[in-house]
Length: 169
Image (cartoon, rainbow, N blue to C red):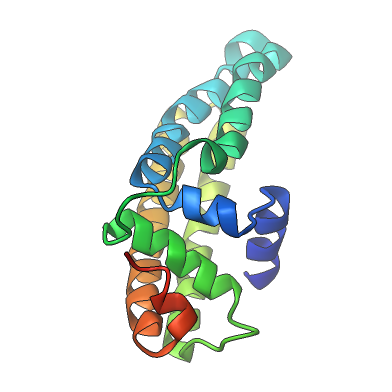
């Protein structure tokens, strides 16, 4: 799971400024809102073949641009802001260790998301819409649960770590 988080952070080039901007709740919720159109674009491969890449490309671009285009939030007290900062804390756990109970739960949630992705892929390959949608729902549920855990982690860690506490406003 660590390698995946590090890969995604590198892919999205999340510097401190991007993290601040991504902590804007509009950034968080608009990324969640991009998932159903992405699912539809992927499913459209059954109808239009490789032309499905045409709707996938702007969605992928949006997901990359998203953390950069919103301004930093005026307040970081929202659940979404705290979830983003929790992800940042989690990624830095080799520098500032986090309690093992959080890392264990993150691993389990990652397994749940991976199972959802496999279910979604199986549904896509077999052209089974129910399986495909069930997998997508599982991914969303586990991602929301992960965000909740990340908000909890940030709340916990920001009590004791001055740098993390400084992210609050």
